[in-house]
Image (cartoon, rainbow, N blue to C red; front, top):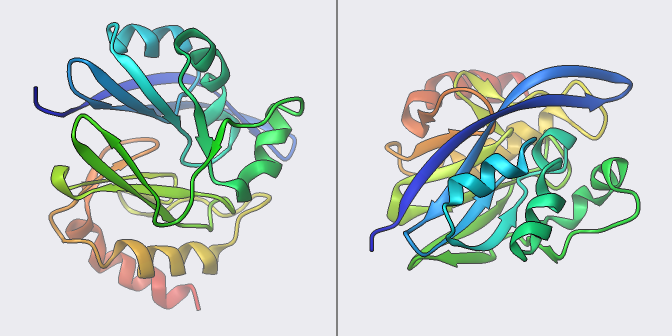
Length: 209
């Protein structure tokens, strides 16, 4: 059975620093017909479980802990028995949404996750959030960037726990070195490629320092 990437869009609210915004989130499911991982369990646990179609869920991976990326994670974990994984630097953000519980495991820079014979490598890419990570799957020519990199530039850094020079460093040091044909699958909006974003990112890098 060959590995594939399934895509689900869910809708809800992002809340931080006293404000709330309606958002659409990308949920990515990587696996084959028997097992999968979910990247960013956003808003609707039931819809994500339905999209899994009875497959064994190996892990729920959080690219960062803004509430719109984790608000369905505990319910999905309870329904499937899968562990919720987060970089520990994002625990302060996690606790804003779930003060009485913690994730089941840590994501670490350079660590790997395996599903359906495919390896995804964790890249710690702080800036949008302290514990933000991307997941690079070279066999799929894909990097899942959460809110670190979008079509058109870096993720937002205007709110608490974020820092523009840091996200620029992360993109320069961890993402621009990936092959230009690598597909960038983002936390919101359309996908792009590293090569398509590289010229504009060079301008952002100059602005970041």
